Image 1 (cartoon, rainbow, N blue to C red):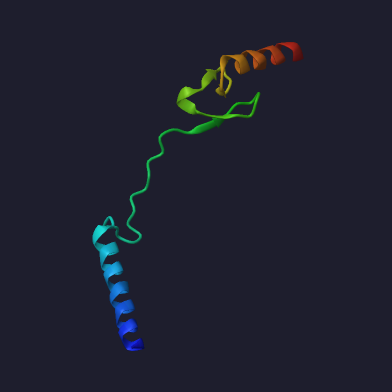
Image 2: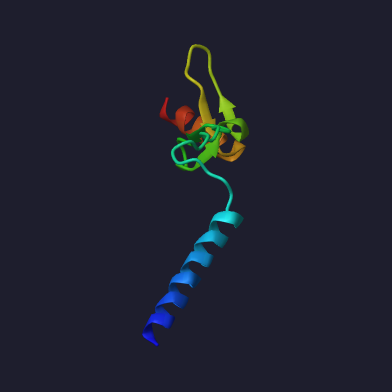
Length: 86
C-alpha cells in the first residue's frame, strides 16, 4: 500500500517538473542581457529630490558647473539664496 503512494507521489512530482520546464520561458543561466540605463538620476541641491537628468531644470552660469533642479521653484529658491548670501 505505501509503495503505491510512493510511486504516485514520485509520478506527480515528475509531471509537475516536466510541466514547469515546458511552460517556463527559456533562460540560459548567467546569460541575461544587461538592462540599458535609460537616464541618469541627479539630486536637486535645494530639496534633495532625485530627478531624471532629462527632466531636470538645468542652471549653468558662465564658467560654472551645471546644476539640476526638480522644478523652477527650487531653481529660483537656489538663485535667491545665492543672491542673499552675496
